[in-house]
Image 1 (cartoon, one colour):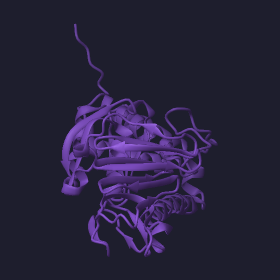
Image 2: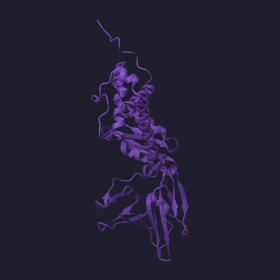
Image 3: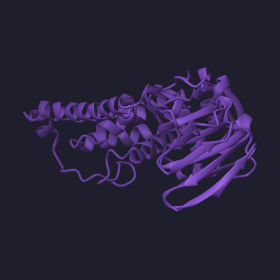
Image 4: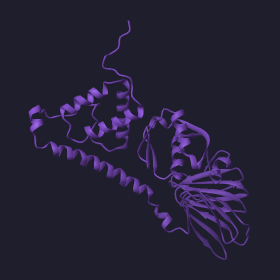
Length: 337
């Protein structure tokens, strides 16, 4: 005979449950939790399996966000609550102060998130000193005085140093495709934090992000120098390498130019790309920040072609093809957990 618990009810709308779970997080973490609050919280969780699941998911998001590093969330371990009689609860003059403390805590959290969001929107220092730069989501093509062109990806900045004997691009940050006009009297060199890439009449890409430099060649040849490790290599069409301060020149598999430069046509092209790299690519083109909180998701890969003006499709694909869930703390802060 099948039996059912009279306390269990059909699960409400999941999004509504998630909002309720986050409301309980704020309420129970305010530092003014009463025994009655805990009882109401237990009753709420017991309404259905969906309530318990929403709570566990919200707890993982909250702890991963790091707002409460020194204490476990309620529901995982019991809170220490000082016993109070109903009479004291009704007559205490401190009740309004408890309520105000709750709102002070919630306001402080909101201000922290707001400050974090504003910091994300401030242009990096490299853009302050650049001759040419692009903002988040911006792409542009620059024509140089020698007839060469530079296709700049989002969040890219460089300085221009052209003289009668040399043509130097100082790539401060970001990624760009260089289509170089021939000039045998003046070498064309792209300098990054780790080294240089000198063109020998060619089209190539240089990416300088997170203390790593990548060089890939579409046409012609490029001579790459790793200044720290005193290494050099010559790349031909279809070849690529990367390097940083810790490691010298590291050859990459045959470079797929269509994947590397898809952003020039307004697309992101992923081919079995690890999820952390997918999120990093989206962060380059979308205002705000996306964070991956669940380490178990790093082994998942994404394949697909997506428009840069419809990055919500990437988020949908991640949710549909991996166990990842999302929570929007603000429109500019999205968490994958």
